[in-house]
Length: 292
Image 1 (cartoon, rainbow, N blue to C red):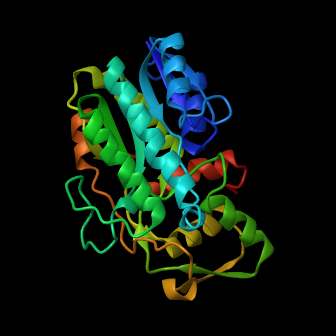
Image 2 (image 1 turned 45 degrees about the horizontal axis):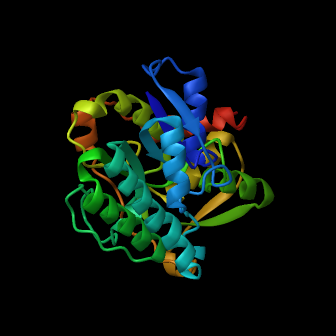
């Protein structure tokens, strides 16, 4: 069965590619086609349709996204084109050809005012352009191809690949004696390798499953401050991490103050185990050569 992975040079797409090359997961019956925006412009409906037909694609894993949260505030049209309109294309093709679609979304669809972990049924209310465009993508899928699609919302993604919070902290920690990191935004880091593994475990099960929205992040809950402290501790970098409030570090886009996700649904329906956030960080730092 042929699987198209879009955005394959991103964090999750890159981890899927590496897992396929080195994993013992039950994916022997699948052939994967990895594309980037240079290989396949998913905003071009006809181009994607031709690719699907030519390669007899049966499953799409959409890892492509506009993820520059702050820049999206001034690049609304581009963010909408990638996070909404391109996803609408994939949903239409999923419906037309009976293709299973796995789409990655975000905790930014919520406003961050909850007091308990967000479930898939909680009301959405994005507070940024990025969050709004991602929610519009979700809604396009639900309107056009709900029977064929899985939406996985995740949070605070980092990886061995790409630019992310972990790599930024490692770099700044080596350059500075102290750093101020926000303590009043709480959520859960998601190691892209763990998310990629979960997606590959889900694939063999989707033919007979009720497709829906799911939440996935690693287990546990921390602030960005706590996360930065642990990065420095594990990497043995003697940089002092000081807690600051959100207002002390203003950004163009508003961030959710609380974005812990309830993962009970995905664990129950697909029988997957989710690692603790520290275990993911430990593995990532070892791969980066920073675990001392």
